[in-house]
Length: 293
Image (cartoon, rainbow, N blue to C red; front, side):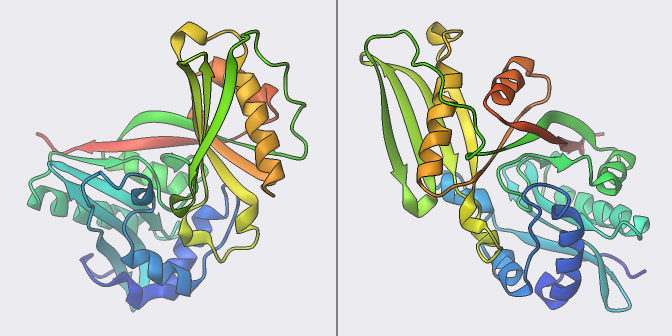
């Protein structure tokens, strides 16, 4: 096996497509990538940057491990202050040593940039979810063997708008109103619930990353990025009603599949989503690696 290093991953597009597809096809919506689309993705800012234009820019840097002209493992990362942000990682499950070498090279690069930690949070190879899905068992195993720790734990949940339960009765607030706004350029839409003039709840919808726009059914999917109910208005059925309204609204826009993620330990939220027709999918772990002695 060759020594891992920084090189242009675009030179290994066919191998990189295979590495990524072995992973993303095992999580919703199970899309596969084209070489042309992946080539553009390698050059673009992080997939979530469109939603946070005020955040510091993250220049993506490539690291790969190859042998005999074949890519065995790869990742992209960036540096923000003293944190190294792992954008995504992919590895051949049949070459366990390649991931080990890749992570070692990533640690060396992070230390060389003065970083005290490596964080893997939102994973750009998926839509609307955090972390590494547990079905990528070879990646999870390799990270843990390399000293990475589990941070937050999330679960992917999906639902079809056509089979969603009827919208529940409107919560018992006479001055409740629902307003909508959006930013089509960023593929964002928001629903705002107010009780009189007081904000009571919000729900944000994000379209899938541009990376997947050539995949079949791209326009049928979206993510429910967040739903928040202010504390004084909790336990009045607002969340369940708002989710139902969002599902109805999305169906009217031609969206048939909705994906969301929630902390695995947040049982009230999971029950609320299940009552709204969402099914529990793979669990994901957000991983981190401290570089301090």
